[in-house]
Image 1: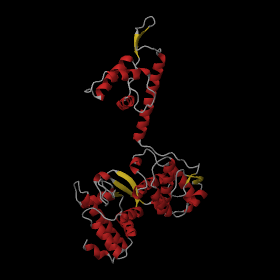
Image 2: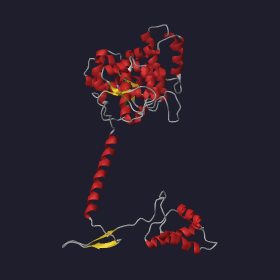
Image 3: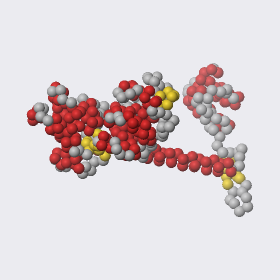
Length: 386
């Protein structure tokens, strides 16, 4: 921290490299739960030989915007003091971080989080959080649509999590990318958008697709995202990314649905597929039970022996009668029930409680083969008959 002030009047490349190194050293001190020193940790972020899982993709510009949006960091909090010093000297922190990442040739960066399990808001990192793969989107603009769509899909996921637009936990581990991004990239290719503007537009389109599929999206933050777009929704309708119909139940803003030519199928996790397979298996099991029940003869009595065909063993079919009525049922009391209550009232002594009368009422209903009512209904009926 004390030697960093010597680089303030130097080159922006040197200042950016020193800033990123200090940020990484601060992150290393936060999540130092593994062997090796900081030099080994920095080298692993350059060559990728660290053993941490890669959770998403980001770029130097997006990373700079994310780091500057964090108000404070966890102990030792050196990064927060550096940002305050750079803002006091009117330095562009985002540009310095982007140049520092390029100068250090980082291929990975720790996946920071801005909120812990106790709802404390500060930047911190743990080795279990994984790392982000750092890439340069401008260099990949000449790649194929499939390669660009997979890259932008990962950056959109990071942007959704950074802006807290929706619950991104259900989107981690999806078995396929967002299908609408590939179709939208073909239509916005001629606009030559910058990296930030392209990710912002694709994030907005993703939120519209989520709303159409029934997922949760924060309306207030979506409206703020629309204000940061390089153009309005009218331009998206002209490009046939959005259609002519509005999204249902949207009272915060005017939001148009996606064009019919844009695919809307949202990705699913492997656990969702397992759940759907369980539902299908339960449905098939229910169909087999229904078919087996249709083959059985209808028996009116409680127990009866079914005549078996020649060469088969006889079967016994049991049919159960409901013993209790639903507590929400409001119907007329039958003459049998009223006779039971009248008999109990005549035989009641001062020491007998209502609960003991109710148990006798249940026994008599069971002996007559009729369902009994709830205790509340029984007590209320006895009061009315008194």
